[in-house]
Image (cartoon, rainbow, N blue to C red; front, side, top):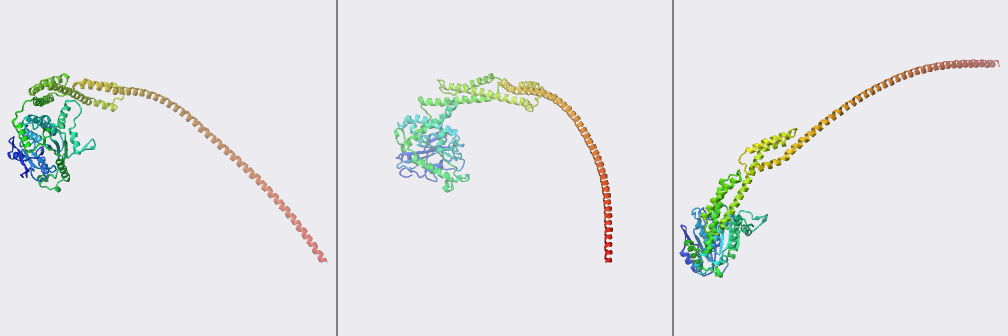
Amino acid sequence: MDPDGFMSEPLCLIENSNGQLVVNPEAQRTLCGITQPVDVVAIVGLYRTGKSYLMNKLAQKKKGFSVGSTVQSHTKGIWMWCMPHPEKPNHTLVLLDTEGLGDVEKGDEKNDTQIFTLAMLLSSTLVYNTMSKIDQRALDLLYYVTEVSNLLRTISSPELDEVEDATDIVGNCPDLVWTLRDFFLDLEQDGHSITADEYLESSLRPKQGTDQSLQNFNLPRLCIQKFFPKRKCFIFDSPAHRKKLAQLEELDNDELDPEFVQQVEDFCSYIFSHSKTKTLSAGIQVNGPDLENLVLTYIRAISSRNLPCTENTFSALAQIKNSEALQMAIGYYTQKMDQKVKLPTETSQELLDLHRACEKEAFEIFLKNSLKDEDQTFQKKLEMQLQAKLDDFCKQNLKASSDRCSDLLLSIFSPLENSVKQGIYNKLGGHHLFRQKTEELKAKYYQEPRKGIQAEEALQKYLQSQQLMSAAILQAEKALADRQKQIEEERARAQAAQAEVNRLAAIQREQQKQIEENARAHQEQLRQMEMRKALELEEQRKAQEQVHARMLQEAAELEKRRIEEERTRLLNQIHQLQSNVSSSRDRCILQ
């Protein structure tokens, strides 16, 4: 340690010895040597979640606070490291690393609460380190510790010699920095990207309504908002592969996930620039000796357990006690009803009798565990919640009966409905068969056990819905009868029409036969006429040939006579010529 009280390594501030919290004298001396105002940054959270690693980063050291690599918790009690503030001159940064909560080897939830409460009371910036996401359990734990812290502030205020005014609790509350380790969710809400801070505020947002369940949901959120007016949230990816986590403090930044490295830098930068000085009422800044005084005061208040019964404190305790008694009675009632009630009950009275028996036992549980509920506020709440539970059981009973009856009706009547769909009853007399089958199935339904209070109503509703089916079958049967009648009439008309067609066809065949006979007769006449004509033509030809032959003969004879006459004439001419020649020759000779 240097002359200014600054430390080269962490020092145990509060030892946790067998569940007892004891202040380390050496740490007391160290605090008494710090005259500067102190910024106190404390970290709390479940064991083995990397709290010490973050505190070493704030100390700007690789090693310091013990970082374990096994499932065992390393940090025991509360450890302190004092150093110059990196960004605030003349201020001391006090880092408080706390023992991890929920250590299975320790198994002491009360001791966990004491350590968490001390860290909250001593710090000006509280780092709440949880895994993966913000869940109801983490909210409930933070809410519970804030309530205990408020109570301890009130109890301890006389011992602080007016250093801290109990009426100014909220003004002196630490800033909250919620760190989410190994965060794997997508920062989205309603389809839009959100920041880590918006995620935190969304988780703390109360719901609208006056229902008791909503009040129980809203109470821790409203309390946390009031106790921590200034809130910040950081998310951290996994720093490295699981196998490397055992040597996390030995790893350089280039061996870690770049996103994780940047997230750690952002976290440290925010703490350095936004951490506030620890103050008491009226803005009094706390230095080392003041912080030592706070440590001793709160340790004595926690260890003594002699809580003064002021009206506010007792009311707060009574409020918590009666709330617990109320929840215990409701839980007992719900458990017993779940065990005893077999839904659906045959009658409403059966359910009501079970309710009254369980209600009586639940009131006995409440009265046994409640504290000074003089105005019966919680008893009235219990009555209202039990009535609401009864109403809910009645609704469940109604629904269970309705579901049971619906299932039975479906099972019993579905074959009938399938037969209807297949058209089995779409025939003459089908409606009578359908009604007969329906009565048989009704009798079968009545024989089934544990149908509950909706048995008759469900059946009547089903039968009423079946009226449409029955009417459809009846209408189909009537239509079928009408169609049958129509078919018979059409068949008779068709037969008459066919007879007429046959008669007309016979007439037509007779007419056709007559026509064909007439045609054959006509053809025969034509053939006879042609034959007669051919004979006449043959006779005419022969007559013509005879005439022609005679004419040729006559012509030949005429030609023959002409030729003969010509020959005769020529002969006569020849004789004449010969005569003339002879006469001429004779004259010549004579000459």
